Picture 1: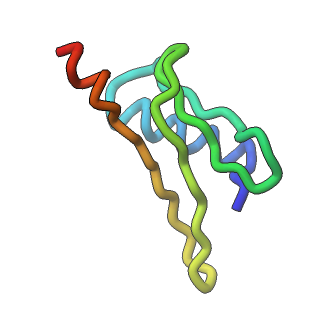
Picture 2: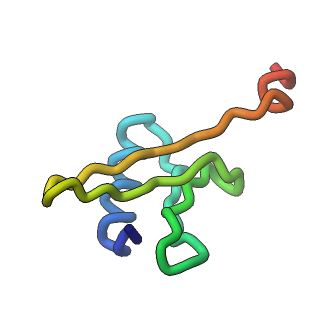
Picture 3: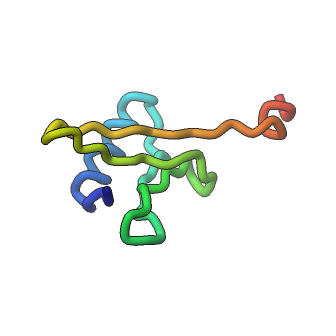
Length: 73
């Protein structure tokens, strides 16, 4: 399911406060059913999916961590 602008703004605020990072941004995905895209600054870090299980709404944040990114540390 696609997230509305209001949902993206609420989730963005939640993540910014949770991780103490005002640079976290959510942007609309590139298609009708695309998940929202999560960025920290200009860096793409993952996607947020909306789930509706019999009227119970939840949001899943999926973040892949590449081996190349880990090797930089």
